Length: 257
Image (cartoon, rainbow, N blue to C red):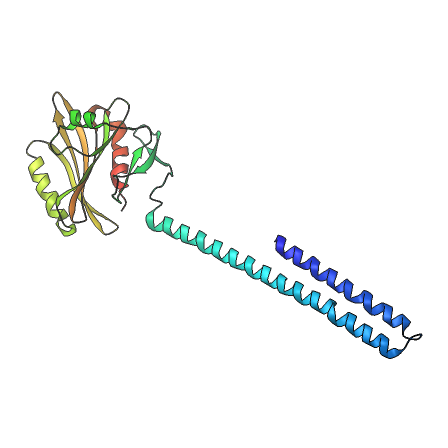
């Protein structure tokens, strides 16, 4: 806008300059030779005002052209950013999502993911990341998840297992059925369901397992990522299941690719 205003002022100034030289020769024509005055008038009118007006106009057009180009580039950049955000779901999103728990309270959550992997899941922002030593203590050293988030007293966990072992997308349902059969021999399987997100088939198991003298409520999601088995798990102590079960379902349902 600043450039446009400057251009307008320049044109107004040029118009005033044109009028002054033309007025003086007109008054003196009666006393001096017409040929001399004609020559001066022509020279004054042609050489100065025309040149100034042309230069100013060209500068004005150039300024407008640059301004329009900048605006167009800016619009394209904004649109591209919005499109990328929509396509990627604002993956690095720091956007906060509120999840209601069993008490009707809002649990603030954000998307997190394993490093170098493009699927992600909501995790409460109050949860801490467990160290390798803490993971080994809770899950053992064999087939332990690579990334685990837990609440302050470590009674609620969200775990990510890095894609491993061959598993294609069209094999997920069979894998779910096999896991249900195997786990039901030692655990109480509540349900085994299939869903699909962004072209990825996801098997979801809900079950209750025993850990020493207490029960653990689990929700496990199985899916294929780069033709390998990936697992995301939510679990909590069964005695606080009433408060956290809805949160667990929301977490598992939040998986995005």
